[in-house]
Amino acid sequence: MQADPARVRDLQASLGINEVLCRLLIQRGINTFDEAKTFFRPAIKDLHSPWLMKDMEKAVARIRQAFGSGEKILVYGDYDVDGTTAVACLFQFLRKCHPPEKIDFYIPHRYREGYGISRQGIDFARDNGFTLVISLDCGIKSVDLIQYAATMGIDFIVCDHHLPDLDLPPAVAILNPKQKDCPYPFKELCGCGVGFKLITALAQQLGFPEEEPLSCLDLVATAIAADIVSIDGENRVLAYYGLKKANEAPNNGIRALTQLSGLQKQLKMTNLVFMIAPRVNAAGRMDDARKVVHLFTAPDLSDAMAYATQLHADNSDRKEADYNMTEEALALLEQDASHAARRSTVIYQPHWHKGVVGIVASRLIERYYRPTVVLTRSGEVIAGSARSVNGFNVYEAIHACRDHLLGYGGHFAAAGITLLPDQVEAFRIKFEETVAATIQPGSMVPELQIDAELPFEAIRPSFYNILEQMQPFGPGNAQPVFVARGLADKGSRIVKDIHVRFCLQQNGLLMDGIGFGLAGKFPLLQAGAPIDLIFTVEENEWNNQKNLQLKVIDFALSA
Image 1: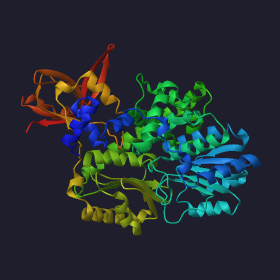
Image 2 (image 1 turned 30 degrees about the horizontal axis):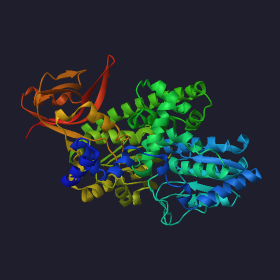
Image 3 (image 1 turned 90 degrees about the vertical axis):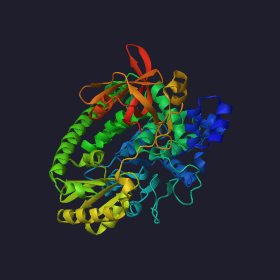
Image 4 (image 1 turned 90 degrees about the horizontal axis):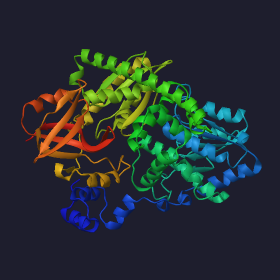
């Protein structure tokens, strides 16, 4: 998006900062001094009242009724980061309000039960005397199962953020800002965020100190990072203060995972996405996600470290399975002479690990950049994950193949499917036909969004300090990507065979940079002609010295 030059000038006059920074703010919808103040200085007071959410009064009243009559309450959540963090937050809080022996949690097993509410989970509640189940990050589509629970006298409170169907489950309360008649102003909360709102309302009603709900914000920020929800509006406030807590007084589980990962610097959103979230998700992918809740509710660091070590091992297993499957898949596709002409990739091997098929689909897209489905055997059926490319709705493509499927679910960018073994080839043909008929040519080429041109003379500590105050970055507030043009090589070199250590000059100014995996393009530098560079700006620390450097995304010869 191009920023209106007049608006940029007006904002620069009121803020007194670099023009490029003002352009970035305008592109993000920040046009005035007051809007910039709110953006750069998020405040807890800017969070919306939880009572604006439809059914919040019903949910709080039903939970207080359970407290009063001594009922057993089961906190139920999905096996991914969003679900497990949400369960940990609410489980810990309820144990402060109700006898601990009357509170328990349930995480469905990824392979034995699948996503969301399961019949086994409801039977567990029945067999163990639970009369109230609070579901987190799931339940909005579980109409029949929640009806089944009701026949046994089990009430449900559903806390979810997925898009509801026309038919809603017969729960005593549904907390979901995406309900059509829900007046809650911010619609993009993650599941853990909805759970946080319930905790906030309960804390207010029960007379807890105002800061009580804030004690779980580092887990809320982890869920926001992992679930790839937009980091603007209310999510920006939650992520900002969640990161602050993660760095100053982290949950024992966050502290243990950070120590195991060897991170010495401050945690940023990218660390939550690439360091914490994969280890949390690995538990459900490779084993049992219940240990994640134990990690995040551990009373001390030594207990947390025991669970973190298990997650670390699960993640190592996940990485090995991911690597081996990706290598095998790439080899199969390279041997398939017809694959190059296709608009889609569908690949199946019965022995592949079900827990990493989605990750492998993403890896294949990095190589071939087309809608991709990776399938494996799961008991008597075939199960798999689909991943999409820019601008293509893979869920709609899967929906068009429904005659060949036992079941499917997902959204624009990703989906999961199950089918019978004898339908794999028919599905492959139909999926390719659908993609070929509907995909736009532009979606077959990776697109890189450049925010602004940034000359070397502007890259100073004062510029970087303000750039860092735009954190946390994520969807809706992406890390700014810059271009610099007409650069001369001044001694760049290949390091570790696959990376490039850049040394570049523009108008007499030198800048260093690092480009991971870019060694294949090194001959362009050797040609001696000027180049254009796409990059982000980061701080590099070496021998206790801090310097700004370019993190190079791509480069090409200047036009």
